[in-house]
Image (cartoon, rainbow, N blue to C red; front, side, top):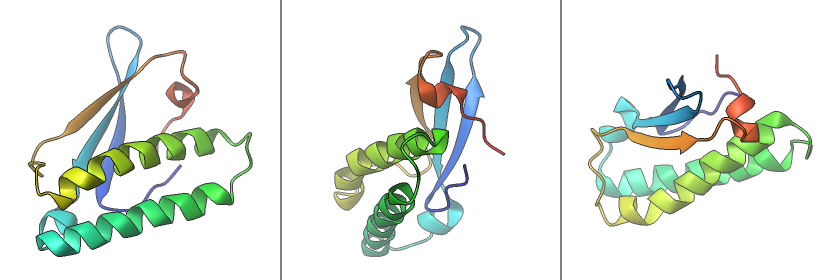
Length: 106
């Protein structure tokens, strides 16, 4: 699964056997003015919805992209309010038995 946009996404295996999503804002996104960041993030969510719609229900990438879309939708109001320090990484824990936990990145 390749997701292009304002977030650099990586999957990290933990010592407990679970996985973590590490989300970092791209340098290009951080360089934008605040109103441009909002526009970029809206476009990113639209891009995700468009890409998800073309995937089969059984495609394992669909679940991963839906997860990223949900996270992005939750981040959007905070980006619009300029409440998120863009230098920080966002870490999301994923249990090993989650279908998303089986997806690898390239």
